[in-house]
Amino acid sequence: MWRLIWFLQGYVQAELRGASPEWALERLSNARVAFLRVQRIDDFTIELLLLRKDVLKAEAAAQKAMCELAVVREMGFGKTFGGLWRRRLFVLGLLLCAAGAFVVPKFVFFYDVVGNETVPDAEILRALHSLGVGFGTYGPDIQPQALKNKMLLLVPELQWFTVQQSGMCAHVVVRERPEKLAVEERRAPMNVVAAKDGVLTSVSSLEGNCLCAPGQAVKAGQVLISAYTDLEFTTRVSAALGEIYAETLTHKQVVCPDTTLYKQPNRKTARRISLLVGEKRWNIFANGGNLEGKCDKITKTHMLTLPGGFIIPIGLEITELSGYDLVQKPLPEETAQALLIEQLERGVRQDMIAGEILDEALDLTKPTGRYELHASVRCEEMIAKMVRASILKEETIP
Image 1 (cartoon, rainbow, N blue to C red):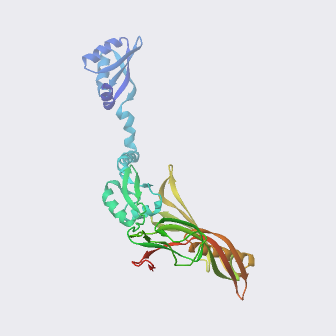
Image 2: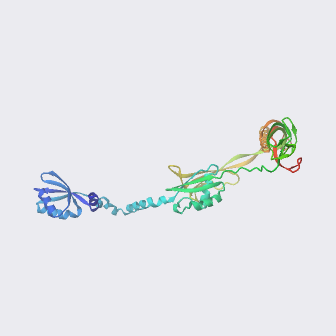
Image 3: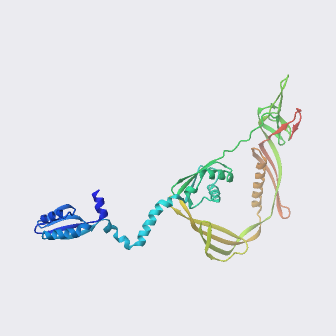
């Protein structure tokens, strides 16, 4: 404890030099001068510590003992930090740093989204920003409960939301709303009918009265599984359910022009560099002017990133423009056929509930100004379709 008191008051390391330094110590005691760490250097010198305020009194007492008091070194708070008074800007900087260490952590500068699978981080952060929560938001002003109610309205895919602040970083914890499965009405009478003409290849009846078998040819709209089952003395009514696959034949025609447009670079380029600060943008460099006509645009954004992946909303945006002209050229037959086949197969698969393409018979012709592809596509697909059954057995309501 005495070390702290002496450090705050300031002390010196001094030497008593004379014929009898012990007599000088006795004089210091009589003058009520406090001293510590007395150490003999030689027969005529003693080293000791004195308070700075007692130096003059100690010098007078030493002279009465025919000795000399010499100050070797000054120590204490005043000596250590006394130079700061001459560097006031440095002191001000230290005070600001100390204040910032307490104030800055109360603000939120970085956000980390946790718990989302299908909803992008950017969508959640944009919704937060629209509610006034973003870079530099004062942490105590963030009310998680009120924020949750507003966020669930802005992002319906979320079921739960909260914000947990940890220093200058906030963890946005979300839970996505589970996808609701369609509730089937099991009490209403439902028939399973054929969606297309075809020859049945697989029949799996899970509920209802099955009226078909593999190898049977059926027409579109024909009842395959009935909602009504005759039990002699009564009729059982249910929602028919099943999976029925059939081999179908589809005729399609797809068309495309015999010419196409190609991009031909015209050597016109332009480059722009912009400074991004938050939502502000300043153009700091541009060359090439404004390109007239068509051009490709490539934008690269480089944000200031701290160690740990924390992104600060300060960065550069580099935009490069490359001009081109559209040139019309003949479309080769091989390329046209590949495009038409791709379009054909995509359309056939979109018309299927489930299944696969077994075979294709193609005929490519080239009338004036276009290519035409006539195709007969053989598929194995599911043709079962559920429709509402009427009260009468042999009628269905499409």
